Length: 418
Image 1: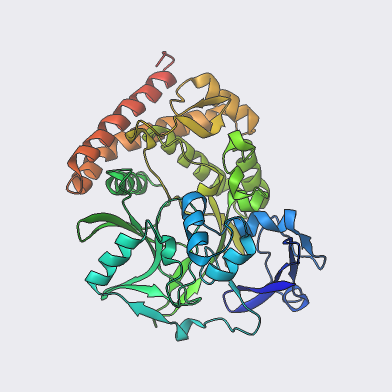
Image 2: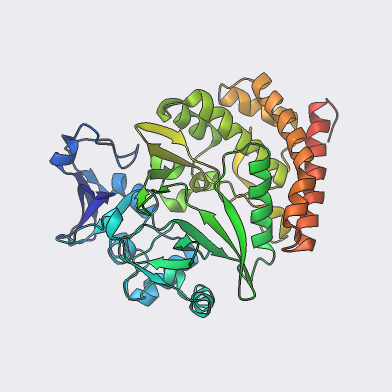
């Protein structure tokens, strides 16, 4: 029997075990269950003494690991099977999304004031960026145990006035560094444009900036699940994505694969958020925004819940990208809108059907659609001016695309065919 100790920040929460046949099991420690401030790791793993079998535990724990190509490359580097969640967590589960760390029995967690990191010079940073496509999360580098979900090359880092550092062991990071992949030219400008636009129209988004590392365009995203105190110590805030909260494994993040639907997401917020009256409208605003920018990839792992101060709230938006910028990316929505599968979801009947399916009411949806269109159109000029220096062609394409899409939505709302 192999086991890993699961921590939330520096507090021991439970044990993840793998038996000789490879099956997982998670159990909360009794001492954690007895603490007045104890919270569950996940909505899908409620506080209880009875152990959770692998089918219940896997969606959460597999959900903090990288996916697809990066996962396969990491497995090859580490000499493990890419289907072995436990071995992957054992190797790279020191610094994960949320407040979770997985450590070997007997290894104590790093306390905020005793963090370990490695400063990177500019040439070293350029080398790291160059290696990321073949060495995701810098797996196998001495002292690093970093994990992030998703299929894009990215790296948790500590960013401060003096530069960028790599967190060692289970030291928490502060930012996520995302170099532009060669197969999606213009992605860095696309994401900074969409994130800047989202912030301009009032969506809750983390601070994001563009940065050149050598000749490689990158974006640096401030982690919303980390808080840096005045003394420089970093505290983790717990979070989980919607797939984890609903008990869907990462390979079922799309509705077409049996993953979450919009109704599932609204029900989750209605039942689990401590402020559904705020979070449900916030989620709907992000849904409308994703349609306006042409983002077909807003799946169940691209929405999260943030746990802080006893509250469970919709996390800030992230991974906002106009996927229409690349013709070979699917135009099918990750979650259908009233049965509409196309990212060109401008038929009012589909939105009315979605409003009925989610019990939200059409008047509220209609009002937010109109407001979103006007806010986006009013903000586009300023956002273009702030981002065009990074990639003029991409920035102009996004402006034209979004103007067209907002116009189609407004026309549909006026009662005319788009």
